[in-house]
Length: 448
Image 1: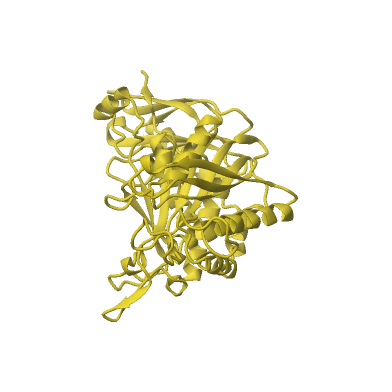
Image 2 (image 1 turned 90 degrees about the horizontal axis):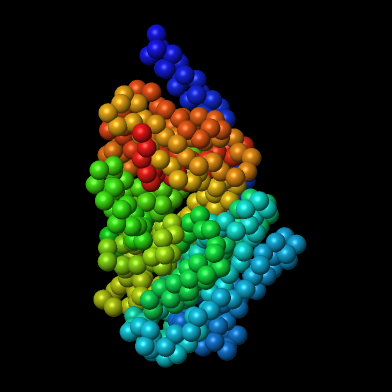
């Protein structure tokens, strides 16, 4: 009888979870529909038309160089802000670099990021960030005069960020959203480093950063053509974790349950819910093999961050002078960009920005218990604010995704009867009354 009551309770709670906490939000479908391939194409063509956007290129010209590019981006953010009655705070954030700061710096220069912040109504100091890179490069990254249109790498990511700002500025969110063009990526991730340090200095509570680097190519150098798959790169655990946390992992698990990995899982689940035609590929790696992107400086400071990009790269178009050799065309030109695909990946970003910006904060200090018991106990610190409650997630230890969940209401502890702690991994998310969920929080401590 006790087992029957337990099963009935779990089924009832699961049904309640499905009927309430897992309902889709029609506004998310609206956002997908509003993303415009034509708008993205126009911005990519404009950015590629500046000839080169090398970090050390011309800053005075109105038609060529990184100076003209960043002024165009700021002007576009300003226009978007005007259209939404000054809903964006638009500004330049900059840092100075010299040749002593890195081997790819040929001369002194300002690394200038273009930032647009859409302040949240309820949690204005909590930020979810979408980034694209402003700069481009030729075959020789030290060459700042040769044409380097950088249409896919990374005018596509920058144009997607601008388009997300245009669409999402039409809505109000509880948390703040940051749309940013980062500079100095090709010289050593300097723009991301500068903004991450700026965020830490100003005590931003960062939910996560979605770094978009090359979201417009569907034809791989290996001949594969795929306009639905994309990759989500995320590191397993933060590099800032303590020795205690590392030691705990030996006994309690969690080798792939850091904050960046939870952000990747969130994106994967959201895309499967709202864009089932897409194929999100979770890549268990910080970035491509031996390479890096602008989410890494945020990871370095302990913030959650992922890289979103195309599934199949074409190396003939990356970091190449424009030329033709042995019948092969090299160079990152506009003709190599698929604008409808860039639209899809922009939508992937936009729906996750919106979902997280509408979600409550994640529960604090999740702890787990249930050693040598036929059950698992979880408790957590409550979220400040009026929320619907909390959802417990669990999965097989070998599963990359959360497989099971139960909405437990507005409580701060719950026991999963009959769920043996040894066989699964667990986490807890907060659920808003609008149905949107926070990131899942993996337990950071134990109790009896």
